[in-house]
Image 1 (spheres, helix red, strand yellow):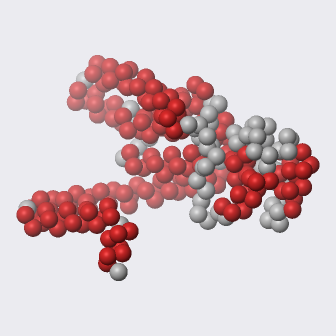
Image 2 (tube, one colour; image 1 turned 90 degrees about the vertical axis):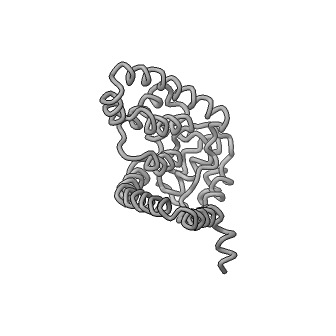
Image 3 (cartoon, one colour; image 1 turned 180 degrees about the vertical axis):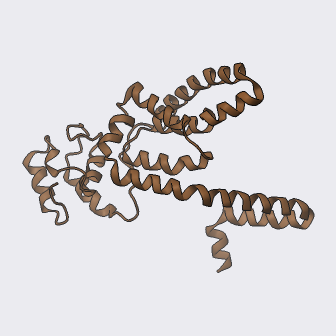
Length: 238
């Protein structure tokens, strides 16, 4: 049983092993490590619940079309600007950005804009500017910001080139029935034309499943696609 746990939790096993070795050779360092671990755990307990509530509200109340419009692949400069504002006005440690980024990505935000949010959160937060100015001076802080912002934009562009823009494999909550979504996707023509209001047929299939869009919006599919969707027992027009 222990062997299986170690096999399935290699990283955790390595950390525990490192703690044990450290304790054997330098118990004082182990005490400091445990103290820091507890501090970070307390910080996470204080911050992450609020982050999860925020991401839950985004998933529940903000429609995918709004996210795609303002953060999607065709959002252009506006999407980059809004993403940078969100990241720079954020509070809390960088790990709090990832649940929010995942929620936006699953709703249709582009890879590039997600990169901008995370990068801005990490290096150009307004609270950071205040502290940086206090210790290093305003000219230093302004110079770094001026040089950092173009770097963030460039990083987002390069990341999109490497990772691609296709969100056809967007994550779906485990509570959702991915098999049912696959059936909906198979009933669609697969043209990814965008006439339904979504970037791809996969995103449209997810929207139909979530009852966020009507089955009547696929114009290229015509009656044939509509009839296929009607035959799926759990799909109803919104």
